[in-house]
Structures are given as structure tokens and as C-alpha cells.
Length: 152
Image (tube, rainbow, N blue to C red):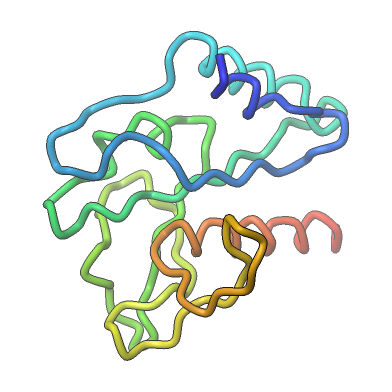
């Protein structure tokens, strides 16, 4: 129920939902949205954005070290989401990357310890300069989508 509420919060005001959560990235867990969350996705793409459809941007996961595969993640692999992965400063794939065919694109996040990280606010509303992973990439992609919609 919490997931469904998150995915359907004020669709008349929110055009793009950005999510950086899903099943454990442990290489063992296969999971996805339950019935209420699936219904929220379906309602969002039919009714959100004043009938043009809500846009769901999803982080593809950080389980590369555990040989996790984002095809086992029913959120990032959903037909209702845009799956976003990361690229390192070098342009190579980072160590945490999960590969799968549902990934649409990547944005910068970091790769090695010496790479620059993303600067943002943390859960305690303080500034951090060490945000990384697909959890940093997905919001950047959502911002790019927002700029494209605004330019339209």
C-alpha cells in the first residue's frame, strides 16, 4: 500500500516520479510490484499528467558486485518505467552496474573511489558530496526528462 501511495501521489501535480528503490541487490532476490503498485503504475500512465501519462524513472540497481541482474527487478523491468543506469567518470561501466535489456540510458554517477561523486542533500537535510550509484543517476535522468517536457 505504501508503494502504491508513493507511485500515485498527486498525479494532477506530479508529472515525473523518480525512484531509487526496489528489491535487494543481492543477486538472489527476484521481486517486483505487488497488485496495488501495479495498479498505481497503470492508473498513472493512463490518467497522470492530465491524461498524457505519468512518467516513472527508475534506478536500475547497484548489485553488480553480487552479480545481480536488473531483469530480476520487477520495478526497473516494468513496461511502465524508464530504467536508468550509471556511467563512471571515465565513461566505463562502474563496478556496481547491473546490466539488463530494460536499461534505457545512463547518466554520470561515479565508478571508482577517486571519481567525483554527486553533490546533493542527504536524509538529514545536510549537504553531501558523496552520493553515488544508480540512485544518483535516476534523479538526473528525471531532471533531463523534465527539461525536455518543458522545452516541448
